[in-house]
Image (cartoon, rainbow, N blue to C red; front, side):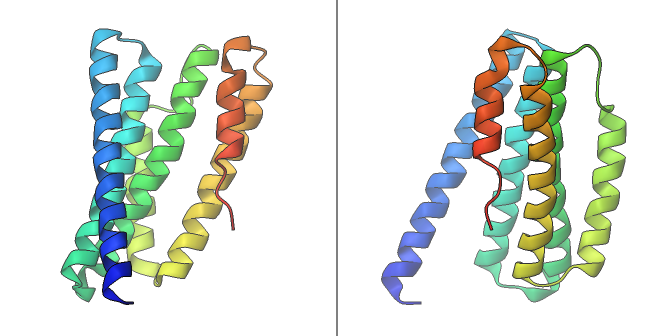
Length: 167
């Protein structure tokens, strides 16, 4: 990789981290001003996505292979929190009740992260597994939203379906 490409990747990563930090801060402030339950979950959504990007960025900067399993576990856990918390917020917006409790989410995601850190190796394998899982969650979420008969979430269903991970 030449120096220009490296600088472009670094700049792109800085822009992504900055954007995610602003979106996460916006949702944390919004849920404090308007304490709707789905907003609390969506603040968690963007924070989890920010954690995933920061963790991988730190790993790229350090280039320290022994951290690989921990980075894999944290990254995959944060991305799963992103998808599941998005679904939880949408569920709460369209139906009464929860899909799961915060405790259930944390236990499940921690187990997933430990498993990923111990057994999943290679960027390609991480990408394949994580994006397949996120795609399944987002596809189920889009179907749930589309069938909810709540007119105000049609845009949300379309956005979720549009952002399904691509191979």
